[in-house]
Image (cartoon, rainbow, N blue to C red; front, top):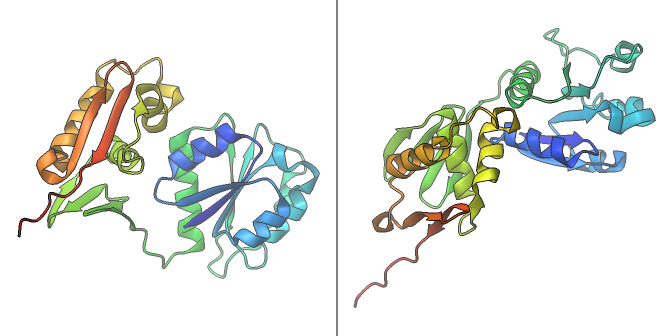
Length: 233
């Protein structure tokens, strides 16, 4: 699904995108950009929208699309501003989430809104990197006709690695992207190493399979795709 995020906070946009890895999330800061984006779901930071909030929400009325509002508190006139019509099924297409944002809460709110707005939509989202096919929300990976089930964090870690082929990723970046800043003080030192090892073994990320997942000493990890061997004539 294409999701537009109206916010002036780069940190919030990044957190939301990490919370919704199966969706195409794009941050926008101008009302005109929202009209051109044609989102299937709209996330609006009330503070960023300011006096434009009512006009921005008008974009969600025709055609009606689901809206998630981000608020530090509840403005007294919020109910009047967000009086969006219901779908024929009677489901309201608006919800709110309070800041500071929590990744799991954002994902749950978005999932509920999408179910209300698109009840007939197949939730399965597919991403493909070479011969590896990732399907969410089932957290399965298909490679060489073999289906492997990963845990939620293993799946998120694998998507992150494949999405950054050939690029070293720091441990701090992996931790924040997969576990989130809320887990910073509770995450055991070896947790990232353990998950990397599991992803390597479960997905067969070895040179003979065309990939190499290596440790970047003192920094983090890097997944590289190896060149196919030349065919002898």
